[in-house]
Each structure stands twice: as C-alpha cells, then as structure tokens.
Length: 409
Image (cartoon, rainbow, N blue to C red; front, top):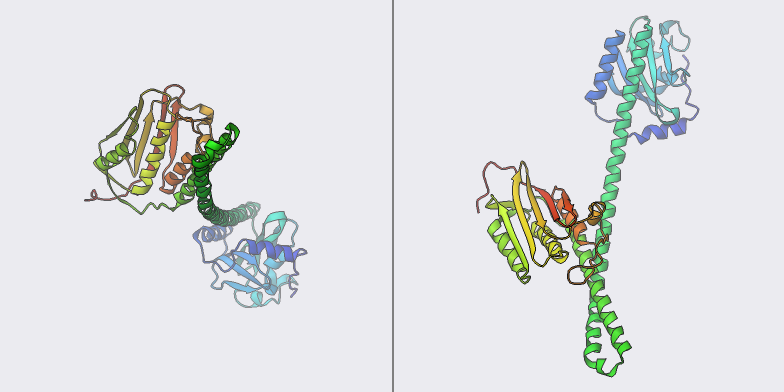
C-alpha cells in the first residue's frame, strides 16, 4: 500500500477547508440527494462526498456507508486531489500496487472500484471529492464520468452558497452591532452636550437682559449670534437623540389606538396653527400598533407638511386603511412639492433640501431619516409621491397583527 501524500499547499488547503465551517455538521438533504443521484447514474452501491481533513476523510453525505469518517492514510480520495485532470479512476484496486493490500480494500467496505472527482475551492485548492465505489471491478462510460463532474460542480455550488450565507450573516451581525454602538454613542454624546448648551443659552439670555443696554450694536449682534447658534445646535442635538432612540420601538409592543383619539391628539398638537386644516379619513375605528411609534411618525410628517408649506391656507389629509397584513398611512399636503431628484435624498440623515421653512428656520436633516428608521423598525416602508406646485403624499406601512377577531378595548 502507498499512502497518499499531502497536497503541495497543504496548510493553505486546510485553512480554506476550515473557512467553510462544514466539518462535522449534520446530514443535509441537498447533499444526500447528490450522492444518491451519483450512485444511480454510475450504478454503484456506494457514493460519498468526502472532505479531507488533516488526518481523516470526513463524509458530508454518504450512500451505502455506515461510517462518517475514515483515516486519511487509507483514503483513495487523498490520491485523487493530486490528479491534474481532477478525475481519478481505479477499475480494480486489487491489481494496483497503491491499494491492493489497503485495509479498506481487503476488508470492510471492500473498495474494488473507485472513481472520484476533486472538489476545488478558491485558487484551485482541493477540499475533497465526490466519489462512487463498487465491490467489484467496473468501468464507467464517458457520459457517466461527465455526469460525475457535473454533480461535483453542484456540490461546490452548495458549499459556496453555504459559505456566502455565513459571511452575509456575520456581516449583518457586525453591521447591526456597529449601528447599535453608533446609536449609543450619538445618544450619550447628545445627552452630555445638552447640559452645557443649556447653560450657554441661559447665559446668553442673561447677557442680553442685563448688559445689552451697555453694549454697542456690534456687541448686541454677537449675543444674537450666540443665541441663534445655540438654539440651532439644541435642535440638532434633540434630533440626534430622537434618531438614536428611534430604533428602540418594537413591532410586538402594540396597543389599541382609537382613530378618534388619534385625530384629537393631532388637532390639539397643531391647533395653534389657525391657517392649518387637518382631516382624517378612514373606514377603521381603531388600529392595533405601537402607539408611541405611530404618533412620532405622524407628528414628524405633519409638522413637516406645516413648516414647509408655501400656501396661505395649509391643507393636510391623513388617510388610514388596512391592506393584507399591513396598515397603510398616507399624509397628503398642498405644499410646494419636492423635486424628483430630491425624493430619495430627504430620507437620508443630515440631507437638507430647503434653505428655510415657512418661519425662516433651517431644518436639521434628521426628522425624515428618523421617520424612515422607525417605519422600517416596525416592518414597513415609506415612500413619497410629489409634483412641484401640487403638494406631496408620504405613504408608509407598518405590520398589522394577524388575528381572528378584532381586539376588544
């Protein structure tokens, strides 16, 4: 018997094999079906997907074998990975000096015929083989060998898909952790800035109240700059705090929201704007959702519809309906509209497309980014449809519960 030699790039090969995290995993139907098909095509009682570890060959899938691994030094597959053509056929192992006295030839499982195709990973490094085995001498036709090659390609496709899925899951976990850390940092930083900023605003007001009469016009202007800059920064910090907290809303935190109560809350909140008319249209009496999140979304959208409206009389319409497993909300206004090229930008944090609002103030570019984050956290999406001069309609969805009966208050 001649034991197989290690691959010329054995360390790199083993490192690549480990990157698939496939060794010692459970049996899977997708792999089992491929070895079953290999046996059927080649007419052999045994077929195996073999992965060559350091000192063993481990079977990811096996047909006609009861063991899950054997020693690598006795393996035919250890020889297969050295074949330039990546196909290795032994028609009668008893007549081959490399195998005639091999324990797996003279004993169980009595390997006489063997045909294997190498499973090549990145840079052509071999991971193992797809092989078929018989207990008697045998020959395979060219079409059978070609079919075996095709099946080996499918094995590699499965392995690559598995690896890509794991990498994607890991990347998503890392991204989620990074986003959480960034949100925490933003929240802590914004919270810690509020106290000294409030002190600056208070001191600015004191300077203005007590010392303004003693100052010249330039001094008074400086105080006004300090006050306005501080107020702008306060708005930005408040927006950052709201944005960092927006990911904390959970879909499962639901309560009954009566639409009459929702309309009353909105009317009271925006009642100070005499030029503003807000109507609510819906065939529903109530919805079952995260009340705080829904209110935050609507308040942001309606506040924007008010602030950036250029008409003497502001008209806002809120429509709520249920569709399949979603609630759909639409906030329509009669404002100036949004240019097509800006309709995606407005949902990105710190993107500002209007120099100032109805009251001469500049936005922070955080509000709609916060709305988008809350909506997506509730399992929905938000879109905008707008025509210049004809207003805008913001539509968002959130998941509604699948229940047999309506919730009872």
